[in-house]
Image 1 (cartoon, one colour):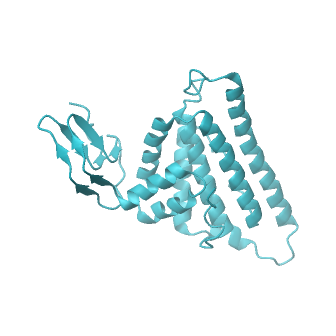
Image 2: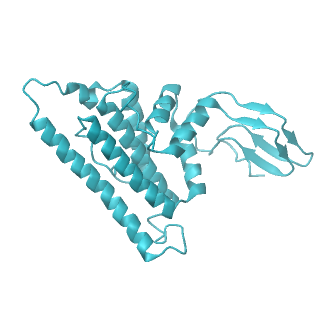
Image 3: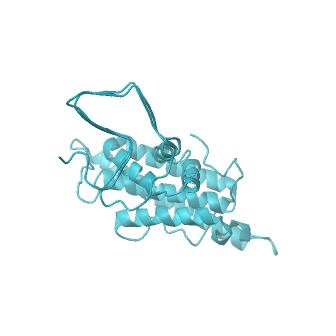
Length: 257
């Protein structure tokens, strides 16, 4: 597993790295939750799901909460036992880069909107102080989420949702932060952010019917598009063909004739 950003790069405090990674976890979990329709589908999108598989998912979700609870206890114990005069302010949310705070608010807003309730991970009042604990927590949660998604992957729905997540990031700095924060935490989100940053390449494409490639935003989209330009080379559309190649930002849907 790739190491979560901020542990080795040293570009951010532990508080910044912790906050960004937790936001990625929240968005990742709510994406999977929506993709498998967890509230309405007891089989989580898999008609052949067995009782042991469902139990594994429930146990894994509970274990994620336990990991955070245990880490919070360690954090509080460390804070109480800190030597007199020891400066802990650099690890607080107030000292974080404004871009990280804005990104955190954006991602938490999305996670809460998907849940139609408060945040899954109620951890805004504490932070980890030691890198070893941070690394252990991130690796433990990543492993649990991976195990859940192996049983109930819902790949198509997740790809659609993750593209919406990347589209919410309205400046290059936010995309770069997400690309780093999601390393070892959320490969789908990392790849989606990287795709927006780098643009798409369309090489030797032949379209005979209808085709839509690239990103597409729904008609209620009110954000702006950020990222590199796309590259087209060898794209052929037949006389009866119809193609949307590139990005769509609201308005009539391409598939609506």
